[in-house]
Length: 253
Image 1 (cartoon, helix red, strand yellow):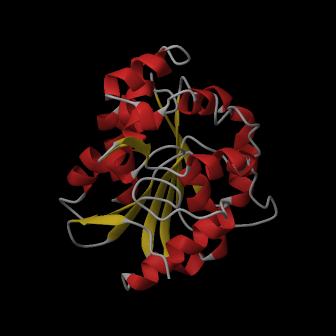
Image 2 (spheres, rainbow, N blue to C red):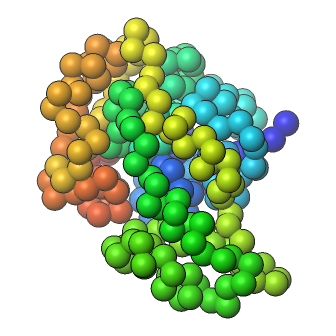
């Protein structure tokens, strides 16, 4: 049985954190350290990401199953699940399928609706890097900058580069992610229902969760509320970490 790579900090009530597409548990270390002062935090690399296993199957059903296996392995009966973007979709899927395992649910900047594929430029950027011939990370950054001008985004994406004995490789399973990219935007079962406390957090500068999405959100997540972090985009936890931390904390407490 393949187990997801994970890292555990602190002790107490468990909080599981799921990263987004092209991310990894490392993206959440700073916030996790703060949360772990009062609770146990389990940071997770989802399949085909970070240091977790690579597999040809890549969709929300299997990612929810991966999480179930991990919780069973860790002997955790019930946890609060927090997911960002793709991780938020996994978290929602898990909550709907395994409500008894979820104490509370926190979804960061994603809704249960369908999202059209919009990662073509990022995939093109990844494929433009000749990883086997690379001499340095700077060289990769220079190549990626031709397609992605925003420095912070490039920094985030290039965390996927791993140094090998003979050059570099991608940590993530790039080919499988690219082949299944439409799975990432799939909608949840819109007739499903989750009745436990749920918090949606969105960035005011992000267009992922619109006012027109709120009815659908509340119809599936019947005990949910939506908070907006001013001045934050889609990467709200990285752009406004203090506000994000406080918003999550007041919900947890």
